[in-house]
Image (cartoon, rainbow, N blue to C red; front, side, top):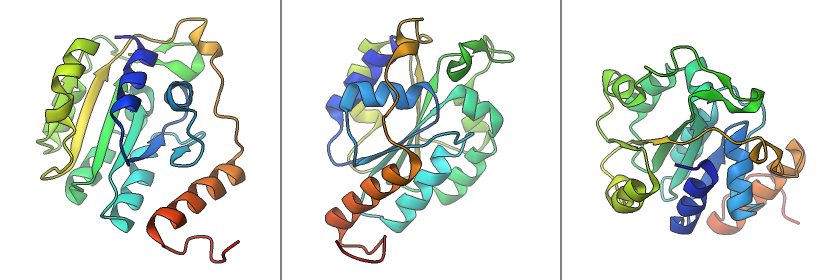
Length: 203
């Protein structure tokens, strides 16, 4: 399925979830689909840590649902994250593994063993049980409610097989925030929604 079309569909099904994107194409695609500058955190140079960042949020805010996007390029740098995710087994966290079989941020350089990697099987090998995989937008539309319910019994992983960005899509705008601005936008939004003290002072 088309990368951006997939993200536009997910954006349309989002309700109150907090969203964490990985470095590279997922941030571009989510920004294109949502223009959300407060309740989405666009990690830069995250090097496979988007789900670990999201896990911390999910632990701290158990009443909030958290979606974490990660490309398979990032996943291949640290598949051991699944062991941590399985042990934590957070029912309010959904890990979307966006598989385009390429390092999207580096002009679609191919991943090692790209045609054979089976991410759902790797997840099962780490003990995860709530795993869903979709290869087309039609499949995702039919299976979304079962894959990403409002309440889940444990950690959920969703593998999305998408096409790499085209040359034109590589030119999509990056989220236009530097790190400090992104931090404050996101933290202030969380303070308003949850009443938690994050920054340590009120404006």
